[in-house]
Image (cartoon, rainbow, N blue to C red; front, side):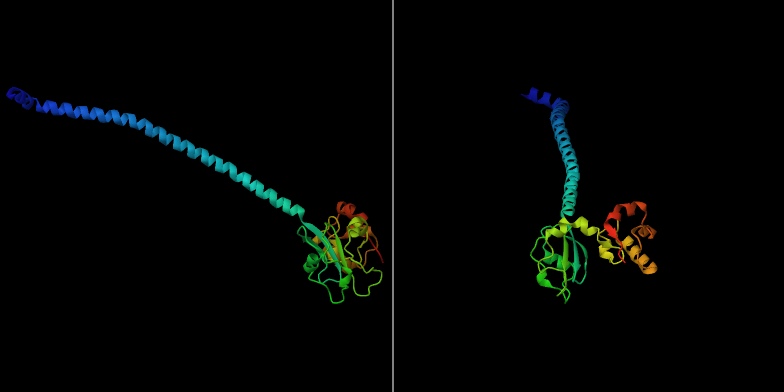
Amino acid sequence: MEEILAFIEEKRKFIMLALVGIVIILLGVVFWQFLPNQSEEESTEEVYEELLAETELEAEPEEAASHESDTEENIAEDLVVDVKGAVNSPGVYQMAPNSRVVDAIEKAEGFQEEAEQNAVNLAQLLEDQMVIYVPEVGEEGVEMEHLTSTEAADTSEEAMTQVDLNRADKAELTTLNGIGDSKAESILSYREENGNFQTIEELKEVSGIGEATFEQLKEAIVVQP
């Protein structure tokens, strides 16, 4: 026993170094096995995050395109009506789908005092290109019935030919094909400066109206003394 203890005492440093070496080797083996697993997990997470980011980027344009499509569809469904006669602000108005005549009258700032309100069907649904005419009380040549019937829409082409360059106001002029606010004001200015138009061809003398514009609307205009 004393010989064994003496041997251990003599070889103690060697034994300690051997034990430390064994421990270092074991730690190295454990670390070596753990490191690849951890790297693999990190790599998987990175790939997942990249795929998620790509999916979100692809989804955003689709959502934007869907929103743009809905907006264009809503715009396309809007109605455009022409309110004339005894209202405070006659003109052409853009109305929402399923609007009624009463909504268009409100857009035109209501009836004038002399308006024959019983001649208008306020509950009628609006149609695109509808003409709403409000007569005055006792106005001759106007039947006492609602004047917003679809007959006005069905004869819209015929009505367009009745736009008189010598009597039309700005709102009526802007109903003509190719005539916006600016050109309508030019027509009115020309009429004030030069008097009534003598022929429809004289319209080409107005600033901003050339041969192409005239050809588009020559069938829709007349000149009356």
